[in-house]
Image (cartoon, rainbow over all chains, first blue to last red):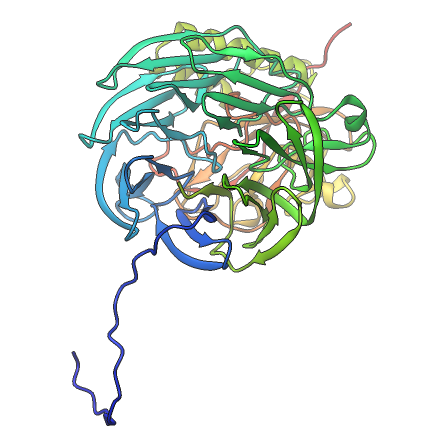
Amino acid sequence: MILLPILAGAGFKADRPSIQNLPAPGPHWVWAIHSYGEAYLLDFDSGRFLGSLNTGNVLLKLDFAHGRPLIYAAETYFSRGKRGVRTDLVSIYEQRTLAPVAEVEIPAKRFDGVALTSTSALTGDDRFMLVFNMTPGQSVSVVDLIERKFVGELETPGCALIYPSAERRFNLLCGDGSMLTVSLDKQGRELERRKTQSFFDPGVDPVMEKAVRNGDTWYFVSFRGQLHALDLSGDDALVLPFSKLITEQQREMGWWAGGAQPLAIHRQKQLLYLLVHNLGPGGGVDTHKDPGTEVWIFDLQSRQQTGSIVLRDPASAILVTQDKEALLLAAIDDHSSVLVYDAFSGKLLRSVDEIGRGIDLLQAFP
Amino acid sequence: MSNRIDRWFEISSREIARRTSRRSFLTRLGMVLVGAGVLPLLPVARAASSERMPEDTLIDGPEGDPTDCEYWRYCAIDGAACACCGGTVSSCPPGTELSPIAWIGTCRNPVDGRDYIISYNDCCGKNSCHRCECTRNEGDKPVYIPSRSNDITWCFSTSSNVYHCTMAAVLGVAETDRQ
């Protein structure tokens, strides 16, 4: 303590500077990801900014284990800031303190680009972390999170990104419109790999990489609004018959899906949420990254559209929390603000502003 | 025509990926995408390769201005335009590294109405320039079709992969489909 010339009055109690830990988590805690290496944690009920993470030069997403209060981030550093010797890591942070506790060095090859939730993942048993690499050769690094060591690198030429399923299986999208499924053994080494037939034509109507899951069923939306659902629970990926989220007539009227994170899901209620925009009749080709002005809601059981929410401002990313009083969060395009809606009634509840330096993705606090 | 280029890349990428090791894949893909010395491998019209491209000064409005996102070459760009960052449409700013491997787009020149193949090489090794930030997605494809994806940071074969800006170098006139 520094000795200061303070006149201490009777009964005066000085503050003792300290460090906050996170309080007990709430159901509406969500991470906002800023791709220049920052993540912000907020309570979207109170609007309170709870804390943040710095994760090297580029952050594409955070990963979480279900049974452990830890946060994993694939990171890239250079010895002289933006130049020098490159080191890629999986950093491990303690959830309660948001402080780093360990790191595992991985090959300096991790994919760098826009933030995508499919650039890394944990296996279903929470044992291994998978990191997608591109040099431009495509591969996946496997990290044992219990032993905290790099296990190996699996080459996946022609296929990209990671969609995990089952206990120790992951799936990649391939440039020929197929899906590659890779299974790992208990040590994290490759057991086998299988490839589907092409389930979409990448030259005509490619699927967006930005998928959501309900258990081992993954939902992909294509540029033209076709929904592709894949059951990835078995050794072979199974394509489930599904229909268009945007009909031909709607598309001709100018409705297109788009955004950095255009899909969201409420798993228990089996509702799918899609960010859409309208550029007038005949317009909208190649607008798969444009922000959305509405969110359309679909019942996955009846396969019907059940509602729509007109957004107050165009949004680039959406997320739905998984509780009974679910929120739909919409990150306003090119701003540091999030609109908060009741996910079922569509009522605008509040706006939370000044969230760091910008928002590229939203991720639920597990 | 855009479909033809897509198809060409789809076939080429698949065949290369199947038959070559990763290192050899890198070398060959890099050569193809740079186009240096291997122009015949791209669907570029040979007859037109010796013809001059119209000068930008002939273009009225933002389509002729390399500091404007509507500049004709930027139809599939994503990032900060190097022309605003100390570079030009075909050169990197001082002190940055030029990545030889890039994604490509096919953009129409408003003067002669021809489609040109544009190579969007990234310049790397310094923080993002954050000027003239443009995102246009004509012909853009997802990340699993890398050669047409502008969502990838194309700082490969550079010592630093930190993204600074993107240029738009013309490789040639795109081949047109013959009847």
